[in-house]
Picture (cartoon, rainbow, N blue to C red):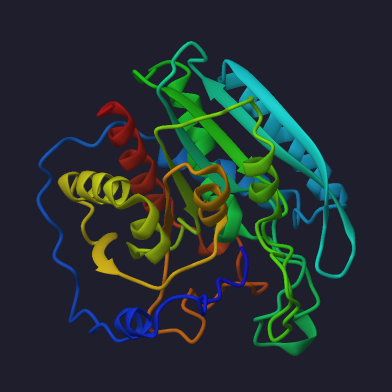
Length: 326
C-alpha cells in the first residue's frame, strides 16, 4: 500500500495526541464473546491469498498483474450476481502509464440500501523499505499489503453466494493503489490510491450510493492490532464504532483496539473525500516501529510466510457479523 504518510494538515495537537498515547502494558485482555462468531473459513481465505502471491508481484503493466486480474474476475463471476470491470489508464508519479483495472462484484442489485467492501489488489513495484539495499528496486509479493484483504473478501463473497444479507453488497478490488513515490521522494500530487480516485469520480453505476463502506488493508499479520485510524473516525465515527463494537462482542478485543492511531492516506480517504461515502479502514498499525507498520511493510519479506489464517478469520467473521446485523 501507499507510503501511509501522516498528513501535515492534521492539527499539531491532534497529531501529538495520536503519537503520544501510552503503549499498552502487557497483553490486551481477551473479552468473553457476547455473540457467536458467524462461520468463516479462514483456511479458504488463506488459500485465496496464496493464489495471488503465486502469480508473483501484481504490478500494473506486468504479466502477473494481467493473470491475477483474470483470476479475480473469474472468481467474482462464480460468486456474485454481477461483475463490473473498469479498465482505465493511470498516470504514475514518474509519468508511466499504468494499465489498470478496478474489479467490482455485486450482490442484491434490487436492494437500494447497500454496503461497500473494498481492498486493493495490486502490489508495490519497489521494496523501498527493505533492509538490504540491493532488494529495494525489486517488486514485492504484497501478501499482507493488498492480498490479505482481497483473500478475506473473496471468501466472504463465496459465502454470500449462499447466505444473503438483507442489504446489497458491493465488493471492490481497487487497482494501482501502491504505485506511489519511493521513500524519501517528494513529488507534489496524489500519487497513491489511483484506482480509488478513479472509481470515486467514475463509479461503476451512475449515482452510486452506499450506506457505508469498509476497507481492508494489511489484515493478515499474526496477532494484528487494528486501531481507530484517524480519518475513519473523522468521516465515519458511527461505522467505526459499529465494527469495533461488533468485534468486541465476538471476543476479538485483542485485535480491534479501542484506541486512536495515526491518520493514513489509504483508499478510504478518497472514497470519503470524493465519493462522499462514509468509509473506515481496518488496517494493522505498529506503534513501536519507525514506519508505523510491520517490519515486512514494503519489503521483500511481505510474503505468504508472514500471513496468519487466524487473523484473516477474525476479520472475516467480524465482517459477516456486521452484515448480518443490517
